[in-house]
Amino acid sequence: MTSPRIAVTVVSGFLGAGKTTLLNRMVRRAEGSRLAVIVNDFGELNIDAAIVSEVTDAVYSLQNGCICCTVQEDLLAQLASLAQLEPRLERIVIECSGVSDPQRIVQTLAYPQLRSQMQLDMVITVVDATRHLQLDGEYARLARAQVAAADLLLLNKTDLVDEAQLQALRDALGARTRVHESVQAELPDALWLDTDLDLEPRAQKPLTRVSDGDHGEMFSSWLWQSNAALDVECLRGWLRALPSDVFRVKGLVLLTPGSTAHWLQHVGTRSQFLPALDDVRADATRLVFIARRGFDGWEALGQGLEDCTVKEVAGI
Image 1 (cartoon, rainbow, N blue to C red):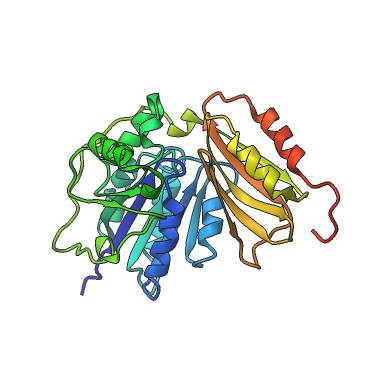
Image 2 (cartoon, rainbow, N blue to C red):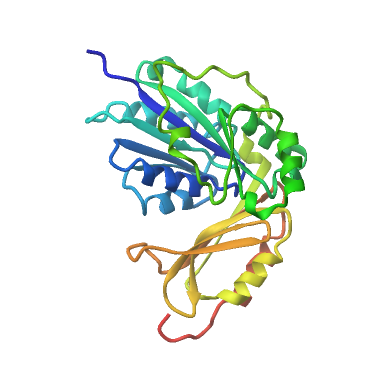
């Protein structure tokens, strides 16, 4: 008897839209099923994989490159390896980095060595209701390509915009059969777990071209590390004042008061600090910044962070 093909769900969306929050929810809701997660992060640290690994051990990392460009061959090899696992996986969830065009991942899944083993279930694109319409130029084109590739749009952070802003976004996205509006990336199980691959295989969508090169070249990234703890109020104020060219900040921070490490997620003017689990290695602050191509303000950002460090606090 031929083994059923493994369902593959792709999670896409621009930087900071809420993909990792969604992924954590999906992993928890699929508890008990044979599921693996592939996480692609853009930058020198794979922060997203570290966060998801607090929820599941079945995390595979594709780091420091765009999954649809520089690490596409790594994705192909990883998927081929996962297809051979026993007991056989039921589902693979791929979280693209925020700089990726998911249509290229869709094309990878159609390669002959994969299509007999697995089948694309759906592409979920997370859209940040507060920022999608503010993107411009090549960044707006990338976000539109992510939307165009989706079978389901998760319109996230709807609690942070008024009805007029939300309607403007709905109008810009156009008519779609599957749009779900959410807060904190809530997604009903019926919209992704109850799909039937045999009855309704996903239709191939036309390719929306963003560029011929590496999407990662549209962005610049920077890693800041320090063994010193940071004053949380100083850090919050500094984050609110970041230049608009900085799209995303994320990482693990040591904060005062107290010695608990926290995951930091920052987008726009909003920051979220979530306590890390006790077994997370937290001997230093490590923050990844992602900004527009050509951004040259890293030195000033580093000085601002240094100004927020606590020089001498006992017990930290």
